[in-house]
Image 1 (tube, rainbow, N blue to C red):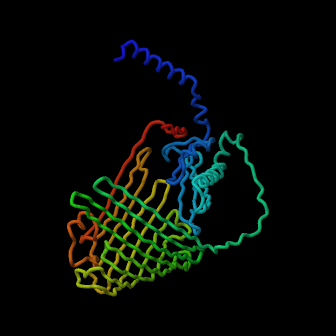
Image 2: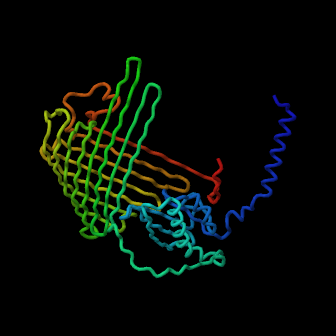
Image 3: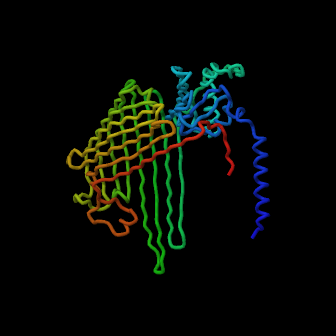
Length: 416
């Protein structure tokens, strides 16, 4: 045990050191720039710590309602496998009615550091107009690097992009082992009028249980290949042909080949899809299925025709984002064989510091035509080795958050 006088001495010493540090800290006026615009970055994929370190001519706040400039970043995949970023600068308070939009693209091979530096560059470009109207304008310095004359570059790959993916995982203990292997190979070509995509994949999972009498091994395998041909008809209409091959021990299918044609209409122009989209899509298809075991409908194989209809809306706005869809499939040989799925998501800042988010879906299931007539073993049920009969499935999450206190969010401290 420490003597009380020793403990008192340590506490007084720590307090003295803390007081000394506080007296030598940078004055608050140097940390939060007087007269600088307050910005709120609304971007789920940005390196916000990096941006706070590098953007030294603005003040950061933690809520959009406290900001002079709301920076809203939306992202979608571009034809080369990279991303197209749309950065919107929405003025508030003294900058009301000032709105700018900048767009830049990154490549699939760009590192995180390259992407964040490009993001910083366009943030600086967009903020210049706003900062120029503040007392800090006299400290702005704009430089220009003259581009070199370059000949037009011919793409030797003709817009084709190839991707190979593979992963292996395992975990276990003295009595149990689980292992999985997944591989995927993809080729795609995206231009203004046409999108082509082809893929091949396979998946292997096993679970091994050991006891004094030996071990039990349960294996799940699946594999498939698919292709999409998507044609741009005009700024709101698209057409497509899709094929898909699938085999799965879980789904009781040795062979499942389907092909379908589809037509899609977007109520908003496709060029606005990073901010708002409302699509209505109809597909008609045929499929041939060869079952591993005889099904509950006494089938070992069969040809079927089906129709799918989908309507989905997605909006990204300064107050948050919302997504909703309804998706239905019906087999034309028997209208009782169908499935209806409702999905939705909402993320919104209701008022200063308070936000709410919701995601979920619900499916009414009536299309389990491949269920085995032989039933499932206890192990199949407990380990989810086979698809089980069910009239519905769902998932759901809901959350709220509330923060209060200082409005500023400039300081970055990554210690520990």
